[in-house]
Image 1 (cartoon, rainbow, N blue to C red):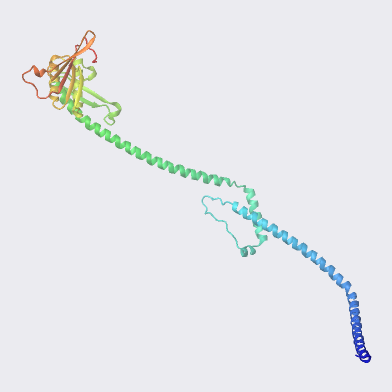
Image 2 (spheres, rainbow, N blue to C red; image 1 turned 135 degrees about the horizontal axis):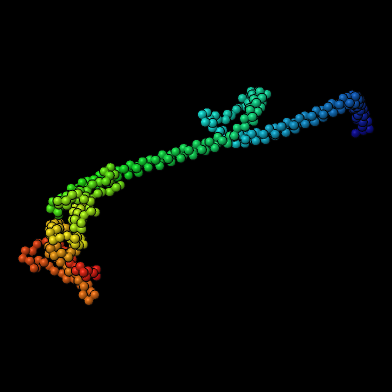
Length: 350
C-alpha cells in the first residue's frame, strides 16, 4: 500500500473518531443535564427515603407487636384448653346434666364481646356473693354411691337372711313334725308298756308348752295300779324302775336297735316284776340281742348264755355257762346274754 492510500485510510478513521467524539460529547452533555436534574431531585428523594425508613420502622414495630400478640394468644389458647380439660361439670340433683359446648370460629366471631364480658362480670359477682361450695356436690355423689352400694349389700344380706330364715323355719317345722310324730308313737307305746309291766297301771307324757315343746320339756306322769296320778319323782324305787323301763322300752320300739346293754335294771324290783320284765326281754330277743347285768335268779335263768364274773385272790375271773346244756327244751336262737356279778364283791372287767 502506498502513502496516499494510507493517508486516505487515516483520514477516514480520523473522521470516524471525530464523529464518535461528537456523539460522546452529546452523551456527556445529556448525562450532565440528567445529573443536574438528579441533584435537584436528591433532597426530595432523601426526604422520601427518610419517610420510608420511618414507615418501615413503624411497620416493623407493629409487626413485632402483632407477633407478640399472636404468641400471647397462642399461649392463652393452650392455657384455656388446659383449663377446659380441667373443668368438671357437677351434677346437680334434680337437674339434667349439660355438657360443655364447643363453638366454631364463625360463632365466636359473631359473639358480642362487650355483652359477653358484661354477662361474665354479672355471673362472677353473683358467684362471689353466693360463694357455693362445689365440693359438696362431689361429696354428695360419693355419699350417694356409698348409699347405693350399702343398699345393694343390705338387699343381698337380707336375701341371704330370708333364705337362712326360711331354711331355719323348714328345719324347725321338720323337727317339730318329726318330734310330734315320735312323741305320739312313744306316748301310745308308753301306755301299752306300762300297763303290761304293772298289769293295769297307766302312764302319760304331757307337753308343758304344746306350742313350743322344746322350751319347757315334757312331764312324765304315771298312775300305778289302784293309786292316783303321780309325778315320777314322787314314786317309790320299784315304781320308778317300772316307769323308766316302760319309757325305755317305748323308745326302743320307736328307734329299735340290734343290741341293748342293761345294767341291773331289776335291782329295785320284786320277784313278780322281775319275771314280767325278764319275759318281755326274752320275747324281744327274737329280733335283737340283749346283754343284761343282773343278780336276780329269775332274770338270768331265762338267758341263753351266762357269764359269771367273780374275784379270787384279788384277781377278776369269769365262767361261762350254756343253760341249754342243762335243759331238756332248749331255744333255737341264742340272743340273751347275762352277766352275773356278786353284788358284795363287784369288780370291773379286766
